[in-house]
Length: 585
Image (cartoon, rainbow, N blue to C red; front, side, top):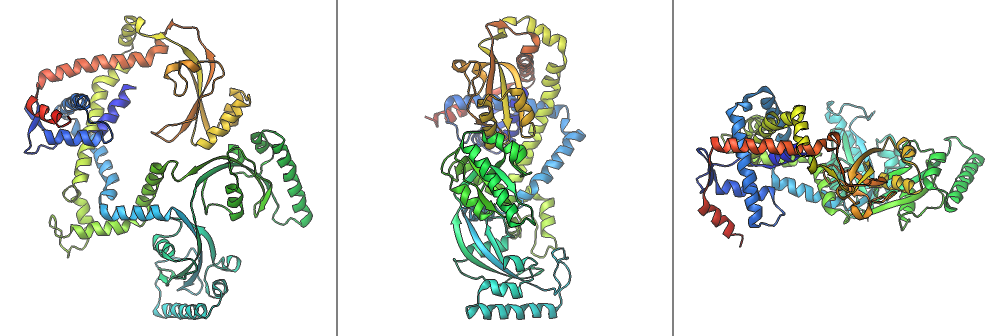
């Protein structure tokens, strides 16, 4: 709806800087500089062609934005409790990221990206400061000098035994305080970035194959890592699986019987029986069988090594693996898709950036920011709580924080003033809206309309499974029941030309579109055409309601803008505008 488009624009707009630069336009007595407009335009159009028409269009939007926000200030809407509360909440939300040194943060992100390109196999020995270590122990518990001395004596023994060639796993079994060491002999398997606490990750990734780290001290004790090998993370694989479990205390005959049962299911799959139906009938994996057996976006180090090996051996989508066994039971896999790291490199890097910002390693960037702030805005090196001092005056220490909070303030005001002046009126005045529709019925006609079902899920993998079921003539009603936990199905009469992936040429009963990703929220969807209508026909008010409301909003907004321009006449400095436009030649 138009309301959403206006809100997006509002949140993108920068509050203007009233610098000593040349004035581009005034509204009433209020000047806006060329620099302020340029900054806003370049921020909000980073990838667009800087054409004269783009600048002119944006200038009109920007002028209207300033007029509307001024109207909100005139009504003192910035002093309303909800506005003040929203601003405070927003400031608290964005403070943490603005208290990080950008250069240091960028280094941490780049390091995490490099670490994420490979998984490393490691072993670990943990020497606890406490003799009876429990994982639930309080790490802030005071450690005596004697306890530390004993731990370091064990560390010295560990180094000596490794130096003479004793196997790491043997030393781990005897010296490690890890409760699982008797079973795993210190072997942690493959790890990835963000698997271990950052100091451990940094040390482990810096090791060469076969190298043992120096001891790392934590509050709980001493940690020693050995890197065994590494392997490239090739991407993410999505499979559908059938799991036949084996009871924990099963004897040899029972294991054999379960394996033979799995072989029988495999033969059915290879003979053409729908894999999805086999999952529903036989799979005993509670975590995946309610979702068509889908195991989505598996990466190196996520699962049992044998599971990963068999999964990676599937060379094409739709290929089915032979039966294989892990500690969980007998598996049969069907590959749905495989994405390399290059498939969506920008999204992958964005995900790594988000993980980095949420990770404890950002403490390094925070400390760097604090150190660089000493000597600025009255912050001395003797200040006891430097972080609190900066947080209370963050607008002085971070221009980006100041700009972002100002942008939010104006955007939030625009939302409320638009709701007050336009959206609520257009939505609530039913008599006026119906009258508006009645006078313009010729503008609301169905053309090439269809009854379409849009199936939306959270992942490409889920969508592929549902689409395959639909292609196998599963009814919409059964699809809704079977996949209600992982998908949403919406139906409506719509014009074929407005449906993504359909178009007039494909307005045929039974047509199924390609699967598309919604960039705004990451969901994926596809469209199924159930019926084609004979058109043209006139839309009823209810059928045209959204379009009618949008058009009525436009009418109200145009009238309001004219009123604002009478109150605050807009004068554009044509000479400065001409200079700005000529720079685009």
